[in-house]
Amino acid sequence: MTATDEHTHEGGRPHDEGGAHGNHPSDITYIWVALILSALTGIEVAVSYASGLGVSGNPILLILAVMKFSIVVLFFMHLRFDSRVFRYLFVGGLFLAMGVYVAVLRMFHVMF
Figure 1: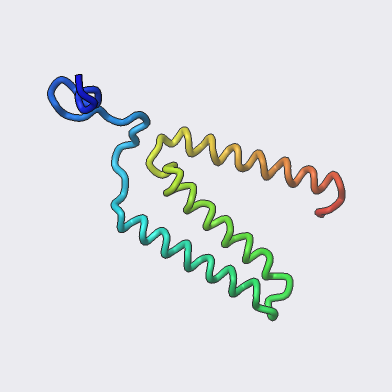
Figure 2 (figure 1 turned 135 degrees about the vertical axis):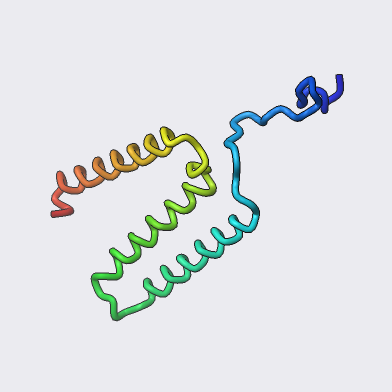
């Protein structure tokens, strides 16, 4: 038995790899995602250097960070292509973490 025989069905077609997720986007999609992430990073740098924004700079940076985080999770962690259950578990855990973070900040009178 050769190494290639181990990875094929009896009909000669290859086995699905462990954790196969179905259809993935093409390479050009990942290039577009990288360009979008680069543009968002450029906007973040510009916002951080902009002195006229005052207090509104921080919420803008947080929104941009959430956008970048979402894109990375959806495409590079493949949540966009997995079952919705995994997406709900991830988002649920994210909201739980944010809730704990807000509760601790409120408890120490840092926020509100």
